[in-house]
Image (cartoon, rainbow over all chains, first blue to last red):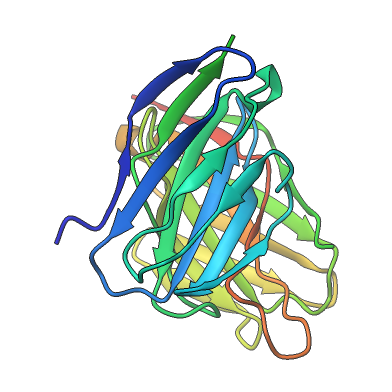
Length: 113
Length: 116
């Protein structure tokens, strides 16, 4: 199993551009999450999904959108990129929500200039 | 919402010493407390977790204690080794009406450096 994979690894965007961060898991997990990690800070939840077709906002959803059309994929869309979105983005998944280990992807380092 | 405070932000120890990292949480309904280790440039990985119905859990050199009354929990690493050097994050999972959806609130992280 590859686990949780993310693409791209690095990306530089100009202010106002858009992009999609890809996340795929092959563990048949129901729950998936997107976090952002700013320098010297912990992870903050952006969006999460409890299954295909079901998504909800986390702590810091503004400026982002998600979709979950399949169990495996959970892309994160950035519209009108801003410098405040410069961060490392981690996707994670778990089989269930409560008491379940979350497995993280390798991360995408995004810089908005 | 839940708020998790983590201390210290940096911790430097000599190899073989013990290290203790402390976290406090605000939501008394939180019932699951994992600890993640993140090596430089890598993804966070779960190292130990504890549920609210347990006061202490141990796994070889690492242990976690939970005080529900005081709303704080701690990570203890004994006989530290240079490979323990990393950033450690605590987290809490609030439980609202019996459902949490796995939403974790993380502390700010502790940079642990173990000197040989």
